[in-house]
Length: 120
Image (cartoon, rainbow, N blue to C red):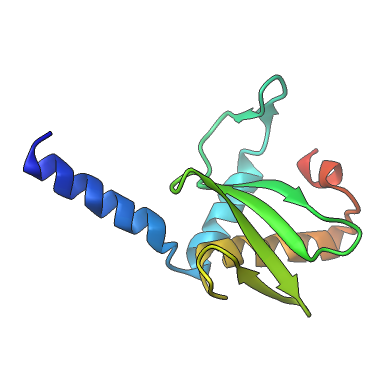
């Protein structure tokens, strides 16, 4: 691998790990909502949203589990007294938080009670 390729890979890795803003999370949520129709056999999405909802604990939404495609890992977001906190980024303003806020608003607005209600 050339030096140029290594630099390019490092730049991509740094960008992927930053999870910079709430806005990125909002856009990731919208993209996920637009392409959440997946192949039931193996749960592969037909498009590639950067964040994917994996699990929410109901009836009280206090933890959300996301899969971050950029980081290729599961992300836990705890919701404590209505305030989400990303366990990976240790912050309240990363893209994982933006996604979770949009998700929580959807749950509250639509009255969803299970993961299956959201994923239909």
